[in-house]
Image (cartoon, rainbow, N blue to C red):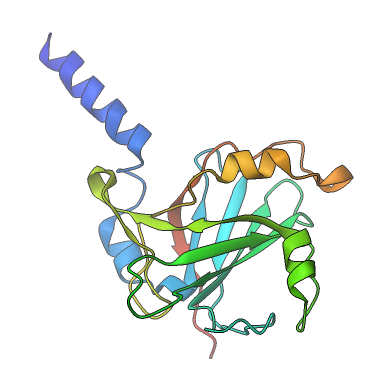
Length: 181
């Protein structure tokens, strides 16, 4: 195999894995609660919120809250939260919801509007998986929601569903929102 082909193949594998997605210093300087990510096709934006409102009265309170928005149809918005259930648990659990009510929602309401629940991961170079950082920790390079696509395909969004479906479960770091003054 020629040197050119080897370099080309290595670069292709790195790009597919999302390793060349963002400079290390950009996401390392950003805290997780201000990180903004995009899917590989730039059709969806994942934005972590600086404030943790705990609107749904979870106990323990979420360590991160976020939205996933369709760039083509901004009214299509999924909301999510990340919770570390106990000190002894080594991985955070996340929940992604659509059209949930405000504070005080019952467990039945949450069940109706929950689309996905599972462990959320931060991916580093070489696709090494770690727990998602908490709100005030340096942002992850890539965020992975395993099996999210299957859950989205199974949910009936009706006419609200964007024409461009989400086709990737990983979101790569894009930018950092500004701190409120």
